[in-house]
Image (cartoon, rainbow over all chains, first blue to last red; front, side):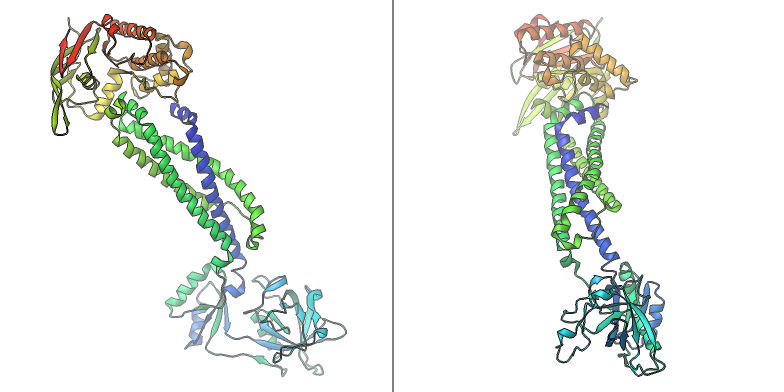
Length: 397
Length: 227
């Protein structure tokens, strides 16, 4: 009880509690933001089909590779490493005039959606399309020139269902398939084909089966390459390792350098590291200083009968109380920091826009262990200082 | 009948300073009795402090024996010595050495908190108030050291020294920082403690101190003589 009273009567302890709380709350905030962002990326951006699609090239035995992929539960599916293309007429977009040839591609290598939704795991089987925002039916790939007056703005067809029909309208066996346009990509993109829409490759296969009696082109190439997708990006390492164990080496077809994409985050993480290390050094310095000015008190206590065990117990109690108070304060403080960062970070970096920052329990545990580590350092310093102290010298001086 | 509490027998203490041996205590033989007020005088460097440190069990002799209540304490380990210091010896210093973050009564409680002879905190608290009353500071119990005058701080220090019912009170220049009135008060208090069957051993340069002591001892070049 006396120790607690003494602890709270020392202004330096309040200073230390505030210093530790502020610094660790900052550290915890950055870790939580980092966790939130990585979780967001893993669940959304990095989990888009394109980023969890891998290629196995020059396979000596494609069937055997398929068997291996079949046995990996984390693999969602595989298909030949080439774009399936179906050329088709499109009906229902414009009542006056149907669109001529539209090329449909598998989702792999698709364009970035700028309006509407991406094709995801949840909707990939629902006959959905992403198309250019400006559709150019008479586009010439060779000359890359077109008559702008003939472009069709597909924005107004977003979330509408269109009909794809086989070319030959006179054919009595003409087949029709219905697809919904759920997203639009930028047609002015250098690599965009303004007649091309994208759907999931299995839909293309279904279309191929549907249109098989027609004469229209369905292209497929390369018998020795396979593309495969894993169900969730978090299983990436496990799947690649399992393939390696079977002598298969897969390469990612697209990736994002998160170090560049999340530059602001990594800057904050660097600041966090500097602050944490500085804090540990400051705490060591302050502890040494306190031990020095407290030396005479320590020696008087020894003189009046306190043995080393008593002194060390006091030291542990003091440091534990200091860090416990800091730990209690840093939790609400972190919530405040998170609110502030939640408001300001998206103003500076769009990557933070859709992310909700939340305090991560795992980070809290990490901070707890760092605090325990610091406590051990402080106790060791106190212990060494206590052992060095000499009653005679300290009293005499 | 002699009531010897502490006995020094053939005590020698040598300090080594730059290859030179300095004889700080030279064959000291003396018995300290309960109920007496001892004054140790001597010029600087005569060995007074060294003697006090030995009596206070915070330094060891190079040869000879220290007998405490008929027990030779030369072979006690640091933990046993700490227990002996806590329960049997009270210390008073010129610089007071009070804990500035503890109130007057809390400073007095400190030595009692590790003494297993006290059964509970309430008893310790009561005794600290009693001791403050004894030194005339019952109304200042809630004051911190910096809120007390030098004389008052020294009285708290005396109360702390008495906390565990010690047999011996060691006072090292207890009035060195006090005015004449406070000095008289402290000397009277120490004399009163001696009359309560405690052995009070004081080192002092004060000329007035001789008027209060029962036994005056002079240290001269490591030798102790009775005046």
